[in-house]
Image (cartoon, rainbow, N blue to C red; front, side, top):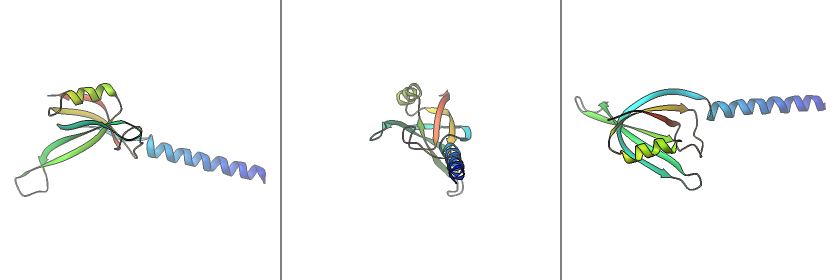
Length: 121
């Protein structure tokens, strides 16, 4: 009876660990987004995180022939990358990001974490 209980507890803990890893640490996707940096801010009540937004231009589902903008909100873990973004607001950036399945409060408010500035114009 005790052995069965310990095995069951071990299996439950293993499954819970895998679920937490998949939700918060598994990189679901990677890519590069390009656009005008709208803002870069440091905010938070308990965990101060770096957040930003770029505006992407393109043709969307608006009226025919009109240009629609898309917003890409992201978080930044590295203070050096944040400083580069903060001092160059309004410029065009190509940002490399990693997409996770969930956000952690100390990592940022979004699932998208920018880890590198590829290009700045």
